[in-house]
Image (cartoon, rainbow, N blue to C red; front, side, top):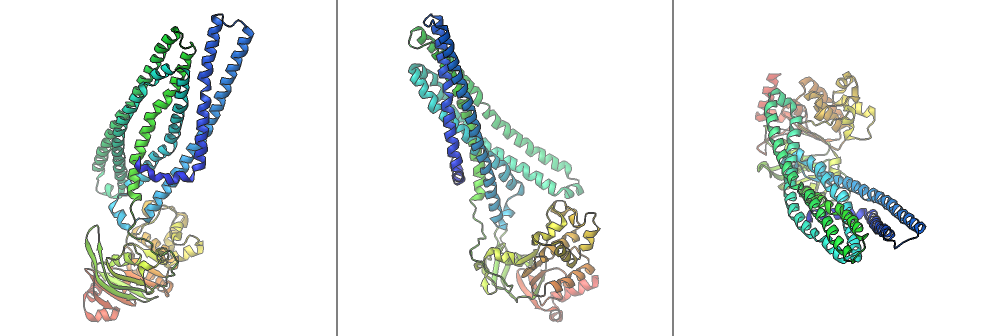
Length: 582
């Protein structure tokens, strides 16, 4: 159970509910001893009356009614306490499940971008849903029944020994054999549970990717191949579940066998002792009730062990991610306001997952409130510049400063709050268009939302929808065209009025006329904002205060539009070609 130790700090939070739950459990189990004890007394009383040892019938009736009343009262009180126990421990397990899911989700939020490039969405979702559900079974039912089981053993076995030591010995002889069998089977359950969860993750990943890429699958008519792939993984998952079920199926037959053996021993050994006059006849039904009281705890030994083993396997998978330290750490707790002056000093950056040297000795300066445009061929390092400014990655070598302060020495939250970012692949949430735009500013008014949409030249498109700004988008914004998604993404970035705006080739799906309108609007909106525009189009870059051309991570040309045209290099050729196309 070493992997489950991480949950101890969660248990501490609810320690008083759990302690009270344990007290209630012990009390209910102690009360359960009343039934066998008084059933034995009733049988002995009736036996004495049959043997003419008791002749007063009225006294017999009074005693019987008293014993029956005690049994009913104790049983009802034990039932009430059992209800309270479940309310305490099971409810706590739901709170613990909630806390654990939040811890995992917060860790997902903290983890660096590189983590998501190395792990699949389906697997991440499975760990926060299926794996947490398995762990909850340990934190609730397994804990409750485990306490119940231990308490019953602790009160029933001493009561049996006190009543008839020899008979008690023979009754509990099968239990050690059961423990050994459970230990062996539990090890197998742990191994197979881990495999089951891994295959379930694979199944979730294939499903998620198939649903996300359904348009590509249909366009290439790949449905039969995807179905075949899903069927193969589903069959493998089914086989692993069947293997696990086979091992789990050993528990209850094993327990029924051993409990049945205990019952036979009680009747046989007890009968011999009654004949020999060593015990009273009422002791036999009393012991049979004891044995059957132990039947459920002994039976759930397997079930509880099974749940613990599955929880251990699931928590191990959860811990793999919880133990990861994010590569990007917030090293400054104090607030550090950001104005917007940006400088790169001999910056080198290598992507660890691909070993691509994206930037090489890059030095540039963007004064606060000015505009920088970055052009270059695909793979030249343009997007990397923006990712480093947002500190999605840390530089391999060199330093980036904002307002003269090294980026690592600034509060990470303050840096990102000061940035409006429009990615190359515009991502929209499955929410209304209005809420997608207001994502950049949660308290935005409808007037602000519409103003941002107008500046992004998408307001009219939205008004043409039946529900306007209340139109709910499909997953990843599939309801909109590529150009509309880009413009909604631009509106989302500018509505928060950030100090730094980063545009990553975000006008590639927009026609030239609309692009010109957007750029003119942005010129008004971003007068005092540091703006960096990555583009393949000269039309997006020509009005920038400075323009750089990257090639294999190095600056090969820099200047303004006119000076770069005079150099007759890459920029001038690109401009001539694009003007010719227009």
